[in-house]
Length: 389
Image (cartoon, rainbow, N blue to C red; front, side, top):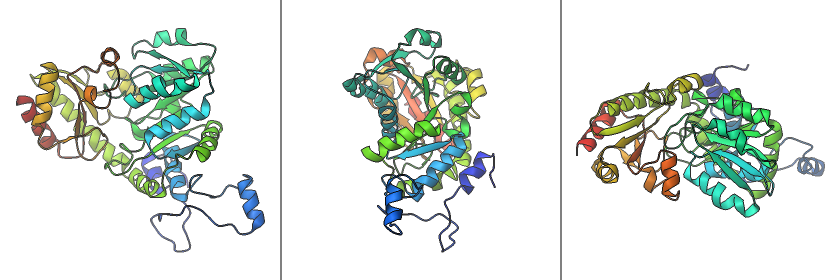
């Protein structure tokens, strides 16, 4: 029986039970699989059979994890990777040829920008950027060799919201691939395929795991595109390990209840920060003061776990704030049970030139908070004492 409710799909999607009739899926810590006879072996390597051959290709645990994400995102097929960035790189490497062109939102993760600006140009793959408020300019950026429109929404780290339907319409009009990084929202809060995305990428390291334990990534979308990504990946070898697959699949069972709490806490934190005299600016998608509040309400179920804010006093005040944190964690990760405070300009986006950082709202005083699952009063009290110190 199939359900249309994400909460049920995340829990009840499981691989076939073994002869032991276990209730919870076991870990398949195996590198390879045996064949019944010579013909079975031949047919399997000839792709005449759908079966596990080698865990670089597929594994029961990664298959279960991917199937859950596909059902939650409304995708036909997917492939799981060792990290979020291996998902990003492998997706582009599999689908692009030398001399192709990417159109990307300027507001993207620092490592993805480095990939576009430094790594892909080795194969003469070029890019053009548009700002979050310049969707009208996208069609002017299209070249004869353009193949992809790429974006994140919400963006990292400034939590801006892009109009996914509009991006999808532009991509469809010009026969371009539309790829979205949906990491901040998770498939529980937003399903970009509904708005025309061909592929959706996640760093499963973040909210999908949710407890800061394992690395992982996943790309889902049309079966035709995923087949190309699969064939590239089974040769290049960025597969997600069976252990991490098992952890992530189990984590998805609690994703909806965890994200509900993350979002509730984040809205309370954002509301507190907005009322504090030492705070210059607060950005959270479900705050009415957010520039794209109405769009966020249209595209997302809730506002997510990330709050961005700027302290009055610039870089020095920001440094003092970070040094005054007592309970919360100073880390570059996000989507953890524990609230994490990050200074993007000196960490996740440090390698991006300052003028480009400023263009995307990453000022010297910008702080990104990944709001965790602690009691909201304790989170707020630590932020309060740090702001006042």
